[in-house]
Image (cartoon, rainbow, N blue to C red; front, side):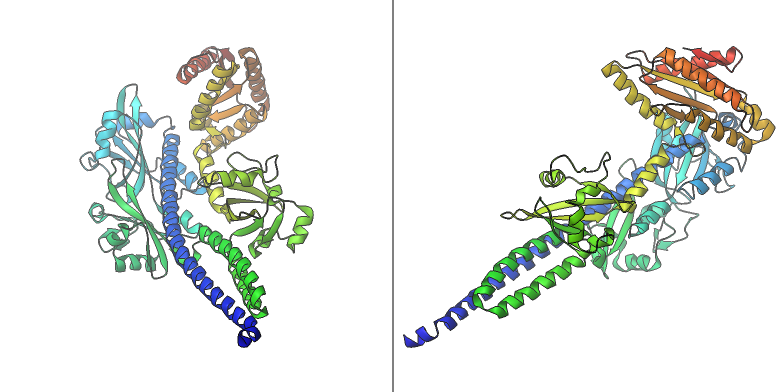
Length: 605
């Protein structure tokens, strides 16, 4: 009894140490198992995200290729040349050069076929004349349907993305116009985002290639992107393309490899896009949340236990806290801890963006919330009227991908944003912001290029058809007025014939700008043909639209910039219930009457 009385503190301390040791073993084992589970789940999510990115990139490239094809078909004597089967070798060289200089598309090919699939023209080679109908099943499809077709295929020259458009004269098909783009720009954009790509055709499809564009192969597999790194091609050859293609992801030689099966419109696998990322560059946001959450809980528990045992255990736990804080500080993402009233803690990456603040205290003196830097824009989270409204939105929709646009020190950034509850009692939340600025900028630029005319900078025919449907729906539903104006330059062919196409292009750019400057902010002007423009006038009756057209006509006549020209105008107002094709027909007929009556006039349809 005396021994126990004298040494009860020592025994109690040993007991607490034993309990703490057991607790730590259970804690550490649990954390290790859960971390590995989260890591594997995150690898699967990252692989799925990468596959979605590849799929979206291919879809965007297909749409952009189709937009280019529609723009290129606007040349006036094109149908005549198909009928006569006489297309000069350099017929499209100038416009291809413009795309190379002014867009992301540095290498597009053009092919023209007659109605039976015989090649009449190829922009990339002088060789043509063979009948491709037996070699390419999509030719039979387009002959049958007479519909535009986006497809991916492997031909004699390359594994590529194609937009095929039937050339029609009424209901009669004259031929097929085809624009071919390549996978190089997709691989290049992925590289700018920190990924490497190797795009290959299957062994079966590679047999079709007789004149390979890239001249790159991995065994019997053709490599479709010129920038495919040699060490990555060697790695694929070493571990086997088919082996890697069968798995959702593979980790070898410190690389995280995600395969994406590239299929044509018939769901046939033509090849694979293998996306590479260094394992140590993968961002595991869920793991960061888990580690931080359990670090906080572990620190609270062991700090309390350490206070009961002795100062040594307290020091040990303090070291653990520093260790986990260092882990968080190594993250490339911004990590913020708050309690819905104020920010409690941030990591070092926070100050790489908010450079004007040296400490968290300095930031909190001027800002109650990071949301003060949010920019209100459709598709992005906003600050909201209630305190930390944006955080509630994220927590209620954990499966939804939330993004914010932020203006920090007069510079725009885009972030994906996630949040998690790390302490229910104190209501502590961790918020992680991942920088996706380059990805968002590229996506916005690509979307803009699809709906923009490259010469004038105005919206194009594709955008007009999208917008007129929206405005007609609004006019019908809410009983609003809606009018449109169609106009073109009088005797424009004479301008080109007399002064050359360079002067003609300058006339188009200068006078399209003049039209735009004399319209209201709500009006929408689009270039729909060579010298043809169409203007959508929301909330505008026919009488007011005629006044606008007359004002534009006078401004053009008085301008005399580059060359003195005149323009003819057709005006009409939307009739409730009519189709977009019918209103287009009516305004086109009004423009035709203006020309019939001597040009430089405004006619109403």
